[in-house]
Image 1: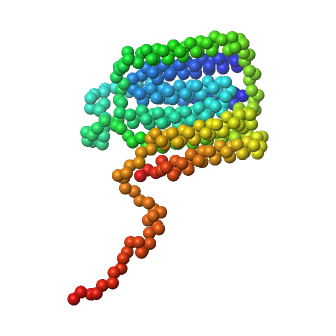
Image 2: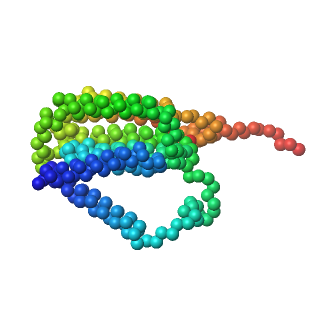
Image 3: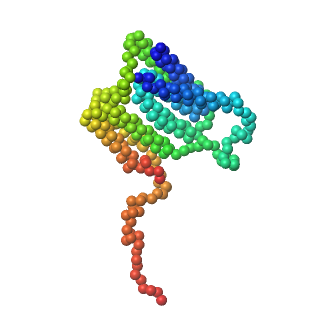
Length: 118
Length: 201
């Protein structure tokens, strides 16, 4: 069975070799003369206003969490779709209940305004 | 000969996984730590693939690397920390951390060393046939035998949705925004008043 995945392994190996070779070639052949001006952050010609790390709004995080939850839900749909013929009506109904429970959550977040950006 | 290749691949991926996991807790830059965690998940997916758990391996890459790690990276890059100071609070957290570490090591030793789980107690399962689909077998089990557990997963996801909203939702009363439904429903009578009056001289 694992023989089917040989192309992926070859792909990984080629990717590692090419990526490593490019980095190594740059390190070995390229000239490295760093100085303070070269290493400083570059912001379109003027001095940087502030550090790139600053506090962000927590709502980005909320959107990301909600995305991950529905991403997980989709992961359950794949094996279900593959075996739909074998599991019959019971499996179909089970997925219906599963989706119904999550639609409750979806309606909740919609009505609560978690998807609004204001 | 085939078996040897699998063994070599197992050692290779395990070595990378252990190395990357160690780097996660030793590098000073948190962004690099998250990237090493991504590498750990990738090699773990490869190990699962060697165990012929193909669907789970793909899900590990899709869900953990694709979503959870992106979220981690997102949060770490947004945090106000640059490079972690050397051993800040190292002594302070040492007792708790050491206790947890000892408990984990003892638990692992108990499991690995117990009579039921010793490698010679369990014969290696026969490799799956060339056409066998791991996704299909998983699906049949999940949607017939483990139906109830599957529905519980839905309830847990629902709890996660509600908890995430309850923890991070903030109403901002000072922000002004439009309500399109109200805007559309406005009638002329609500806004406009026509007053009859005598023309002034």
